[in-house]
Amino acid sequence: GAGVSQSPSNKVTEKGKDVELRCDPISGHTALYWYRQSLGQGLEFLIYFQGNSAPDKSGLPSDRFSAERTGGSVSTLTIQRTQQEDSAVYLCASGTSGSSGEQFFGPGTRLTVL
Amino acid sequence: GEDVEQSLFLSVREGDSSVINCTYTDSSSTYLYWYKQEPGAGLQLLTYIFSNMDMKQDQRLTVLLNKKDKHLSLRIADTQTGDSAIYFCAPSDAGGTSYGKLTFGQGTILTVHP
Image 1 (cartoon, each protein chain N blue to C red):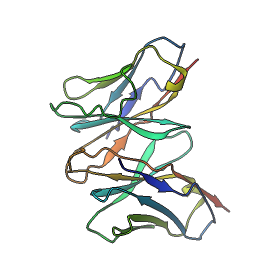
Image 2: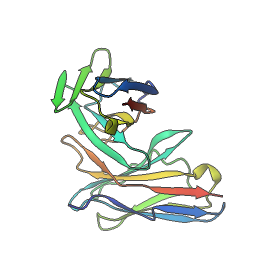
Image 3: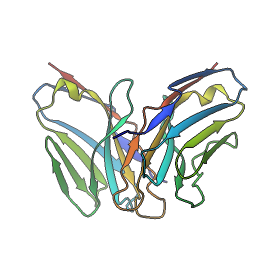
């Protein structure tokens, strides 16, 4: 079946601009996670959504970062006033929380802030 | 928070066994995952072990868990050149209070020589 998809695959933007990254999870998965991967910081958790519960935003690095999940499916990660240190690969994962909690990752969006 | 440590590099000859080690700090981790990342690709879930198990075997992969020492290892038997990739250890509190968010080690770069 279809896996997690993310768009765009690559995004180049200028410092100070806002960007939106999209994630389409695997159908039926109730949990959705955002992570980012950068050379300096490795793989870091950003935010987690589970059903109708309030999201766990504990990993967001600043208030310039926000995310929404509409209708329990598609999620958008928004970065306002981008900075060069935001350059990274942003990874989305979906899964079923509880049980064994496996997470299945999308291919990522490579964000470059000039 | 959780800290996860892995050695950065491992080099083996084709046909030999590879052992990738990981240590972690949070004893409440309930599931411990291994992910593989090939160049330019996303994260692929390889296997996982539940914290009440000592060992799990899955074809060429063997996971060993020493919960007392908080040490996890991944053994790949008969390593092939296609196994060359970065391997990430990722403990999780799946089913617990943190809803299964993953904390990743820095990754071990496995290089397999013909």
